[in-house]
Length: 439
Image (cartoon, rainbow, N blue to C red; front, side, top):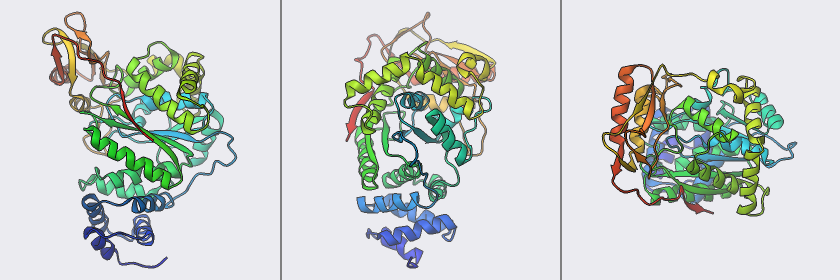
């Protein structure tokens, strides 16, 4: 590979120039072998933030980052390799339900997930509430679990897309996280390294999402779908609502319990079920496992109602060194907060709005999220039995039940939650959780 001068690549992008595939590959190689300084990487990220990348540049960056480490080979697996990725929200426990449902429908799901970021929760943080569950197995264990169980949800390893790990860490501290081409390359490089054949994106929009308006969510969805296809990965995207918490819980262990209840049929929140079913339907059609949305919906319902998806989730937990027979004893195995208190509204009425970001930050304040990347978290805290939009609340129906480490934290969380809810005398019109599809 030809040697380039890093500052000239930075200069070219700063001045709205188009980078060649070779220049991008050189820069990614420097990310991986540390021959580029942090200042050079930060300058490149800032140049891209302001000047963007065109579609060809985005594809080249995604491919180079994918090839910066190992790409998993599943050639001996006679199942379609499928996965979903969410841009992050509050109460989003979809992955815990979707992965075993898809495995029950005949797919293999090698899901590489992340931790909470800012006000949003992370799938790995939820799974680490389960005693013993290994979110960082070696690649051999990861592949064995996918082969034997049908799905495995783990974190990114050092072997997969290492260029992304370094670039993301620098973006996180240089105010360049929100760049659409860099978000696109970050997400897709990890998914391509996992050896996927099909991906569905869940792009959140609303006051609890990073993309707060529909137009910006659509731009991101269109970028990811186009670049994925340019890199040879079948992909579609759904834009889903994050103007309220997804489901009835927000907080790590509490969300695991809700996911288990959804899988076993003990309780299924309609809005959460709508999102799970829609995403599974996209994947089943992408992977050739269903011919239509109607057929896919029937397959999802059967996977849940038969208990197969719940059984697969339990097997995945055990295979990754969590408790055996976890479904039967989840309440006992998961951590519990010492304080639980109902949060009553100041007055009765119908819920007409939630400041979902503020609810996410209330969980961070409880200790259920991180203020710094190196912080530990309290997996037991959060909110349960949350009232959704359109529901009546009052003396007999609280806004939620807070789970906290002490009485003072519970009182402060209650105050924050009341401030995050808007009530009115009449119920609002119900809006669909799935707002748009990007083919």
